[in-house]
Every structure is written in structure tokens, then in C-alpha cells.
Image (cartoon, rainbow, N blue to C red; front, side, top):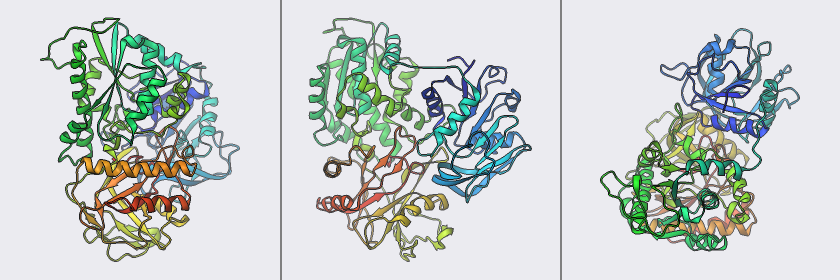
Length: 634
């Protein structure tokens, strides 16, 4: 897209850079993502400039920097998070580590003279933060517009020059009035109009262009994304040019394969080949404990199965085969072409979380972004119709294509399936920092093995540092830290507990998740058991996941909750015991998420039924927002 007349988003590697452009296009205006080394001359025709967030510190050597002369163009500028800090530093202000890091929902106070971006908004409301640094002193000519209890310069402006900086993320749905603020800036810029009348028409045109003269072999995982992508490819290219492969990994939901086959049959789509490769996946995952290695193994096994099935079906493999492999004869094709492309249901959050832009931090490697896939992408051998879309846009596209409502609005399910919900560890992980302190609560957290034995209360809560780690996202960067478990007599989290779920990761570096134990009123002795993915553990989690789904639907909560991962932890009250984590979230595009508040009676019913499963000792309820925790635990 042309820069002329667009709002240019300078990408410092933030998790939400692409989302900013998406929001502006939703307003009906042009936006374009540009690199940090773009010249001021190249930006001269832009209607406005937004500096995105990023995972680094602006004062660090080697951190991404833009040309400060961009600020002399006379074009409206908005800096968000890292962009806010870069703007302050570039103009003579100072940036330093914050005394209190802020992740997740925070209350802000708007100044009496708020300027054009906050005019007409309430004086206090909740925003979404994700930062460890802050602007300490303002540049000359700037005034403070917004502050929090911990961050004095949460927003600043030089209204005369139309320069604005905001520490929080206005582009995510969890910031109240965020779209109003972004729209006010957009209106200030007066960018050129942009519209897309139909997602199917827009994305379909790209598919026809990318697949010109080629066929597509599509990996269908069973989730919404791959289902929509497979249906789109069939519509645009015709069934004769598309082959679908559904691989039963042994880590799918209960009765998943039967349900999907029936759904595609009802749509008249009969070019889906189903293969049970569960034994191969479990064999390859034996003794694999590291979450990144696990994702790599799952992704590479998918490709190995695809290659074998490709050859067994007598299709021309072309460049999809290893360089040493030869070609086979084309058969059973109405339309013969020289090469095949690999199709995937990748959406944009998969790309950005894998570090898919220049300065982005790798939060976790998605199975559709392992090294083998990346090499195929570089060779032009992969087609991903949804790669620039978010989940809400994928659903709109699915409905345009005529997919059943229940199928389109199913809860998201990761490509690796239960594989990323079964936590694996070879040895327990202990907290080594004995001096960790949550200052607001004057409560020292000390660790003696896997259990905090002094149980000094956090308010009314006893607590345990769980002896394993999970993936999080903090300040646009990856964290791999401990969950802390809270306990009280009611076995249900109250308002104070929810506050702690935000406060603890912000104030104590050791933790990126807060869970609440719904099965025990007081901390039991926590026993760790080494474990990798096995059929028995997969079956255990599959049964637990089915119970949660049943109870959620029975309580008429399915439409209220965006996604409900259920995780299995290799800890219990005895050797070999396991624990279940309930992880309901509210979101739209998966870039940010609120931990969903469930009715107490539903939580109690789920807990009672889960404890009846042989092998399950404890049940936890994850209260962590994203950030600081990712939606999935790995």
C-alpha cells in the first residue's frame, strides 16, 4: 500500500503493531506498516505517523531507533508504549526502569486540560498496560495528560506540534475508550479512505494470484482457522486443485475427528483425507520436555506425515519434497500443474508471537512457523490465506463463505492441540530469589523447595510457588516464569484475589501467572512428577476438557467465553498425581485477553467432576490476564 495519504505505523517490534493498522482500516482509512530505518523523505507524504510498542528498552545499546528528523515533518505523530518512550527520549526527555512494572488493566487519571485525544472522555477509566520502563521527565514543550498511581507520565502531548505519546495500548479492546482515542488521532490526520466490501472477495483475489498455476495441499487441524482456510481454497480454486489432510495427532478434543468429518460432509467438501498418526506423534514426543522443542517436534512431525501421505496419494511432490527426493507421476487430478503449495490456516497472531517481524520478540514458536516451514515460505512454497487476519476477521470470512454458525464460532483450538496444554518437565523448577517481596502487601515470599512453608498471607490468602514454569508476555517480550497459587477457605476467588492477580506479576519478577486453587482450602504438600506427553496423559486431559465443555454449555456460558483452554500440570498431592488448570478468557483477536469471571456454582461443579477423574489431585483457576500471561500455558 502507498505511504501517500496513509497513516504510517513505524514497527518497533511490538506485539500489536499490525493491530494498529487493522484498527485504522476498520475506521475506513489507509494504513501501512513501515520499518524503523525508513527515511523522513519517504514519510513526507504520510497523513500521520504512529510509533508502535516494542520488546526492548529505548536506552539499551542496539535497541531499535528511528530517525528523529521524522518529528520535524509537521505531520501528526503518536507514540504508543515503546513508541511513547522513544518519542520522549528523542526530544530530550528521559526514560528509565519503572519502580513498579504495569501489566494488564490499570486505572488512569486524565488531566483537567486533556488535549484533543482525551477531550470529552471520563477523568478516570481502565486501560491496558504492558511496560517495565517509563518516561521519567518530559521533553521541552510537552505536558502530562494522563497518570496512574505508579506511572506519572502515562500520556503526554505537545499540542502545538501535534505530537502525542501514550504509555498504554489504545489499540486493544481491553482499553476503555481506546478506539475513541485512536479515532480522534486518525481524524486529526485526515488520511485517505480505504474499504473492503467483502473479506471473501478481498482474500479470495489474493489466493487466486498466489496459487496461479499451482495446486494446494492443505493441512487441516480442526480449528476455526484451518477450517475457514480450507473452505476458502475449495471455493476459489475448486476441489480438483485442493487436497486436504486432517492428521489425528492423538492430541485432539474428544470425538473431534468424527465431528469435523460430518461438518465437511454437510458442506459437500469431500476432498479431505484423514490419517491417524497418533503413534508417530507420541513416539516423537517421548522424553521431550522443553516447550519450544515440543512445538518444533509437533510441527516437523506434521510435515513428515504430510510428505508421506502426499507420496502415498500419488501426487506430484515437486519442490515440497526433500532435495534428494524424486518426482512421482501425477494421478487422479482433473487439473494438472507443475507444483504444489502447502496450505496453512496461519493467522496474524501466530506470526507476531513467533517473532515474525524485524524487532519482535519470540514469545513462542507456533507449529506452523517451525524452521522447516520457514524455509518453505522463503522458497514460495506455502500459501496462507488468513495470514494477515485476526480471529474476529476469520469468523466474518467464515460466515461469508456459508459455514455453519456453530462451526465458525467454536472456541479457538491450537494447531498442536492438547500438546501445548499438557505441561512437561523433567525436573522441578525452584525459585532461587529468597528476597522476593510484594511491597503493597508487606508479604515476603520465600521458597523452601517447591512449597512456601511459612504461608504468610497475601491479604487473606495463603500461597504456594508452583514448581514449574509457563510462558508469558510482558512488555512485548517473552517471559518464562513461575505461577503462584493462592488459597482461601471459600475455595473461590473474591475481589481481593483478582486484584492480586494483577499486582503480583507487576511487583514480583518471579511470577507471570496467578492461579487460585478451587480444590483445596489450604495449601497441600505439592509433589512434582517428571512427565512428557503420553497417550495416558492425553486421555486424561481429553476427559477433563470434555467435562469443562459440558459444564460450560450446561450453564449457557459457551457464547460468553471466547476461549476456554484446560491445561494439565505434572504436579499433585502424591507421586504421579496431576493437576488441572481452568483458563477461561475474554478476547476478540487473541492479542490481549481478560481472565473470565465464572459463576461460583459453575466452578464448584467443574471442580467436583474433575476431581472424580482418577489421577487428578488438584484444580486451579487461572486469574491472569494477557499480558502478563499468554492464553495458552505453553
